[in-house]
Amino acid sequence: MTRKRRTGRVLLTLDPETLRSDLVETAVGLARAYDAELVTMFVKTADVVNMAALPFETTVITKTGRTRTISTTDLDRQLDRQAQQAEALVARTAGKVRWSFRVATGHLEQVVAENAAEFDLLTICGSTARRVRPVRTPGHAALLLLGDGLRRQRPVAAVYEGDASVLATAQRISNEFDAPLVVAIVAEDRTNRSRLRRNVRAWFNRRRLTATLIEPEPDQTLDMLRQLRPGLVTVGRASRFCAPLHDALDRGTEQTPMLEVPE
Image (cartoon, rainbow, N blue to C red):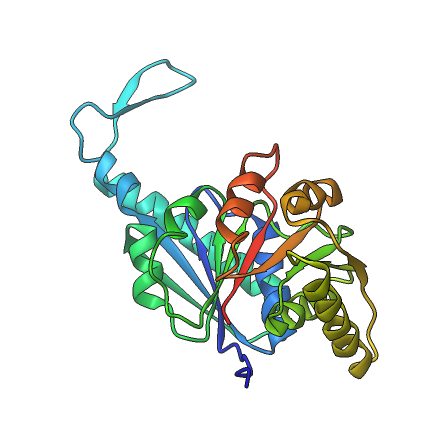
């Protein structure tokens, strides 16, 4: 029997590189879709903090051309200001969504691992995604690797190999963001493909929902997904496509957000 998935919190991590309104808007929409609390963590990344301690780190004042040594105190104040800006942005965007805000210092992947709970949806932004993805997160936490936010007006694509939680996740997000839903049914042979097709149709019929079904050959799945230019791809964490899909999408000119769904 498949365990019914629930989501306790949407955990959004921000740092100085990813302080953007579109990322916050995406996280707020996800929290609203799951009726979950949005927990935003602004991370003073250890690499940036440690950089100021190096004796040769200086900055150039544009107007005068003079150089000035960067102090850890000045940098920490700047990071505090950015954290305040991040909290104000969340406050303006959250609406009726329950939310809280925290500030942490350290390596982002460690902060995520220490603060993630079993049923959280972890929302990891931008360039930090590659570092966080290999971190061992709680087994039932979903991991969303964001590029520049979930792209509206583009389809949500679900890679379906038999796990209904992938369908449920994709449908919930497509409904929240008013995006078309495409389900890619992937199986090695005709018999399994027919079985999965029946399961998908039954799942949507019971809920009186609709989706576009496609049936790519396994070795053509990645290419077909790239051609769709989806706003989000959902895939089972145990799927054979999980790692190569992330790598293939990440090599594109714009990183497609990818949500790894636990069983």
